[in-house]
Structures are given as C-alpha cells and as structure tokens.
Image (tube, rainbow, N blue to C red; front, side):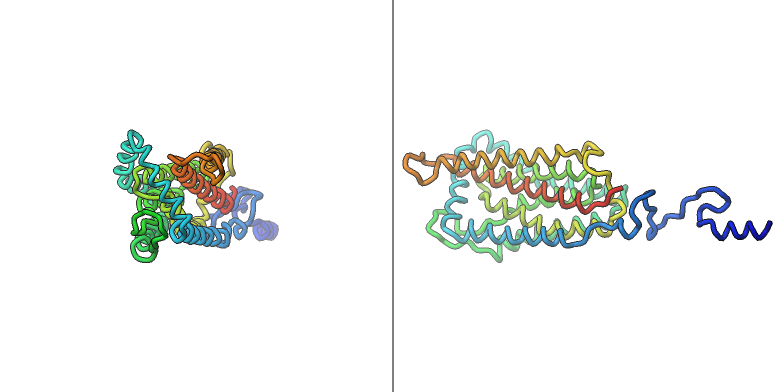
Length: 325
C-alpha cells in the first residue's frame, strides 16, 4: 500500500494532498489568480504609453494655450474681454464666489489630506499617497515658476495688466487636490470622483474669473499643468498598486455608473452650445450686436469644457488600465 500512496502524493498538486482542496499561501509576491481567469503575468496593468501620451498632450495644450492667448493680439483681446465683462456679473454672484475662493485653499488641503490619510493608513496605499502628494506639489511649484519666472506677457496693443498671470495658482491647487484623491481611490470610485473633482476644479476656476482674479486661459493652463503631472504619476500608482487596482467594470457599483461620465459630457456639450451662441452674436458681420457679456460666457464655457474633458479622459484612461477581477 505504501507504493500507491507515495505515487498518489507525487501526482497530486500542492494544496490537494489528502483529497482536501487547500489554497496556496498568498504573499506580497504571489497574488492568487481568479479561478478561470488570467495568469499572474497577465494581471499586470497597462504600460506607460497611454499615460505618457496623456502627459505630452497636456504639455502641448499648455504651450498652445500660452502662445495663442498670451503671445497673440487676438488671443489677448478675447481673454481680456472675458475678464473685463465679468464685472457686469460681480454683484451677488461675485460675493458668493469670493467667499468660496477664500475657503477653497483650506478646503482643498483638508479634503485631500483626509482622503490620502485614509488611503495610506486604512488601505495600506502608502506609495500611492506619496506619489499623489509629490505630483500635486510638482504641479503647484511648476505653476508658480511658470507664472513668475518663465512665461512673459508682451504688449500687443490690448489694454491689460502687463504682468503674466498664467497659469492660475488657485485653480492648480483645487485641481491637484482633486486629482490626488482620484489617484488613491479604488477603480470603482474613480468615475464618481472624476465628476466631483472636475466639478470642484471648474467651480474654482470660474470663481477666479467672476472675481477678476484670472482670465479664462489662466484657468485652462492650470488644468493642463495638473494633467501633465498627474498622468505619469497615475501610471506609477497603477504599476505598483496593481493588486488593488482591480474592479468589476462600469455599472457594478453606483460610483462606477456610466452616469458619472455622461453628466460631464452633457455639461460640456451644453457649455459648447452656449459658447457658440455667444460668439455668433459678436461675429464680425453686419448687424451683429456689441458684446456686453458674450466673451465672459464664452470664457466660462472654455473652462467648463476643458475641466470636464480632462475629468472624463482621466476616468477613461484609468478604467482601461485597471485589471478586471
């Protein structure tokens, strides 16, 4: 009887000796694959290509925004007109947005600190939290260096302040805080957080325009600075934290519903339609009206479109990189 027993033990795979199914031990380097699912090597997240391409696209967009809205006469006129026309809406709206701007830095820092601390302490996502903080710090430092030292605003015949204000520091702080929370969140929460975070960033940027702190291009540039830093940081988070970057796909949880991507798309389309109507009214054609708030609304639309487009793009990029359970 000894020989058959020894032969059966030799043929049985580990974890099934004695007839009972026992799972293999799990460790830091040995995750347990799903039954019938891909092998361990196939469960890795996507490569850096899409993330680096997103960062490069944001950088090119930032350069194009600066070259058109700051270095050309037409761009300066459009941008400055939106800023000047915002005076007409200051009133009650301006006072409300001013209070929001006063609270926004503290609100951004506290909300991001709570979310990052929770992810690091209770979820064990220390590396993701550190990368998110480093990327947010890099975006804010870069904004200040660009605005104060590298980018200049030449005189092009447009009555305006000669000092450069692109990118917006307030908007960079709000957008980077929202993006940092997005990075440390699990995949099923990211569509919802992309919508909430981009809405917060858009509101912050629009508030700086209403209060005549920044022109629309300053806000758009701030969004792009944050995107340029957060895209490669996101790949690092996905690469190292690939075990927890797994989900059941869109619709499996209320926070990953398609609605959170549809809402910003609809909002962007409405903003685009509003901008088209405003610009048609002031088009250089006979009988067109003089602008009173048309440039302002077009500038607001540009902020909404850019902010929501980046939010949807981030949700789509990270959803595609996360592995399925």
